[in-house]
Image (cartoon, rainbow, N blue to C red; front, side, top):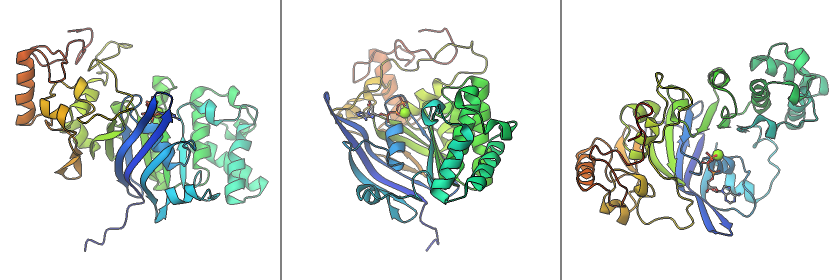
Length: 368
Ligand SMILES: Nc1ncnc2c1ncn2[C@@H]1O[C@H](COP(=O)(O)OP(=O)(O)OP(=O)(O)O)[C@@H](O)[C@H]1O
Ligand SMILES: [Mg+2]
């Protein structure tokens, strides 16, 4: 008996499929994770990896034609069952689990004053009076660092800068004191200096409120030193899951390694985009039998093509889905063999150094 409490959120073997004209899109393909109360987790992966679909499942925001399987348990409640019953869970979505989206303009009503937008949520969900709700909206604007909150309450979204708008959205998401805040690329539409302020703000609010947070981003640099755990997704699957520290110091998945290589270095020229691996993530209308990353992986072997690697525990909560985890003898052997013949088992051409042809790594401008 460890006496350990059940996690606040527990997702098991989540699968989301969309019927589309090009076929069944397997957007999320068997994802599992736990989130403890007050814990923060990053979900990281390139565009199309299934991050937003995962987040929307937790928020009950999937379109009705989505086919969902697996379980989502929040504080002892079966969220999928609640969603299926179409109950108006007034005290759940938007209250206990709340979400901040990438573009603040999509979550704000352009013709309504920001104070009203926040107060509305407080009145609807918590049944507060108009005066109390307005007071709380002002307090929230102050908490998210908006100067002159009293004046801002009566402004419209277009009167605010992008950074202030995103602060308003965060204030609205926090209005009902959520136990989990999901922030989906909350800073992508903002310029770099504002990005850091918003991320730091989210961190401070999370700590002050003992709230759990899921930070969704395509940029591993955003979660570095920020979240407790990271789940790396690719083609709807979990490639690696570990403490954030372990992801950076001892990452096991070649995809994680490649994502780390895309983080711009301090001394690199600005505005230069690093491309670690040629190619793009697949749209998975027919999930591959092997590893979905094999096509772009410099370590890929015949086994990677033939068999999808299961997510395997390495200890300390570190899990990797790879036959040749980086820095293991298996990876070194695979890379040496691929470099010697000039290509991987999937035909990805690589240099003798092991760098895929067409990739830009490390410093900038060194197109190899
Ligand atoms: N409503 C939908 N109908 C059909 N396909 C969808 C729908 N929503 C998402 N998808 C597909 O599901 C896959 C995962 O999409 P998702 O939005 O979760 O990616 P993401 O990781 O959030 O990417 P991004 O970084 O671009 O936001 C993609 O292939 C996407 O095209
Ligand atoms: Mg997304």
